[in-house]
Image (cartoon, rainbow, N blue to C red; front, top):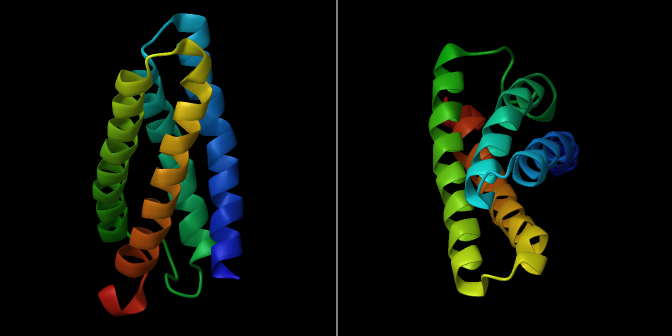
Amino acid sequence: MQFGRFFIVSLIGLVFDVSVSWGLFRLFGLPLWSAAGIGFLSAAGLNYVLHEVWTFKENSRNVSTRRALRYIALVLVVLSLRVGVVGALEFLIAEPQYAFRIFLVGVAVSFLANYTASNLLLFNKEKQ
């Protein structure tokens, strides 16, 4: 059930993330790695609140400043992972027609890393 809620919240965040990222890339000409980073960060705040009050509600009873700061640290690590994956693939492939697929690989890698770290380190009762 928890993974399902995480997936739904992440899907909401992903729609927002992709809209912002792809818009910045296509409409404003930002480099793909930069647009992917901005989109990710913009969705992170929304995701944190939804995870606190819904996804991990059994583990965290209220919004916590300490957990929010830990979430920011986690987001920065996951963001680095996503930007690194997108940047590396963009460098290796260097074909514009693959840009969206490259972006989706970065999204998938960051999703799995984010869920694992959130579940094990951030919203885990024993770790609080």
